[in-house]
Image 1: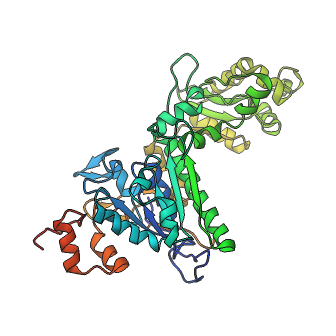
Image 2 (image 1 turned 180 degrees about the vertical axis):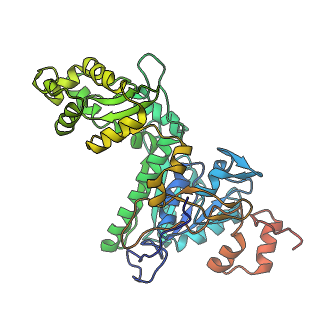
Image 3 (image 1 turned 120 degrees about the horizontal axis):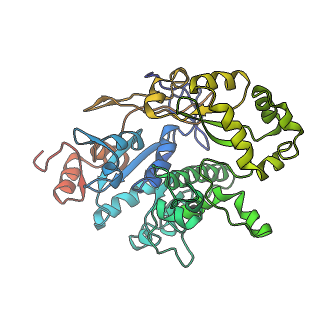
Length: 425
């Protein structure tokens, strides 16, 4: 497992470019993260990975994401990754003084990321209309379950709930079982990715106009966008998409096949050129003359029978044999990897896909490297997620000029929390 991280970069937008920068293309951009749980923190993590100066604001009790997933020595393993590359401050937004501090930070921010229920920031005097009065270039990414308006906007929306609402949950799993889910917060990740994409697009547009704008990223809409092939099929043909297990509807063969040693391999050979290679490999060139299998459309109409033919062939070979045979014939296929497989795989190692920044208590801690890979200005994992309030002192002193005495008073008043600092310090 490699500990290498990427280096290099330059700043974008109106910022000064520097070919010697080591912080990535978003160097010089200041981001205030008011989000919590997964979608907001992931959105901000993407920007931080590419060099943005992300300041995450937490309550004293900590973001809920710190209590998701596994723990070791009382530390969040999930938090080490999703909170990486960020400065962590703890400010109580429920208090006037706390909101005043955040308002001041936002006055010089490029981007604010939030995922409160619509209207919450407005009630706190931190809505976009108010913040943009003193900072017209501000970009605000607003992540919510159902969007900033509409009849459902005030409903609480978690990723998996909005996934159900989007229709994508209905097509996940096997037809003879209830709808399944992916064992990660998939819709939160999709929405966080859209939010980061929207923020960068807004930053590019700001170069032309000097004005910021709101990026409205709804969880259900992000998930619904992945229903792309099924939307016109319903409107034009009246077809309601159904669960298909490991198949990809309309692209056959494209599913799991059992091997002689009781393992499974996923083969994707729906396109005509690849199916021809598979048929040759199977010594079944006759399939190309059979009208049931001669074209992609025909094969999709005879899924069961063509999959049975391929399955009979795969059951005559072990998993390792099939991997070699299919790879040599340029037929896309893979065993189903688990984490142990991934940590041992030479390709993951060669591309440094797992990095191990230092954690203050756990030492090197593994996490996925930055994606996508930029050839000249790549991102980098600079540090693992910090503790709650770890950077409160330094950020408020550097960004807002608070003195040690002012910070002490705020700690005593329980407006801010600074890790490892007591009221008597």
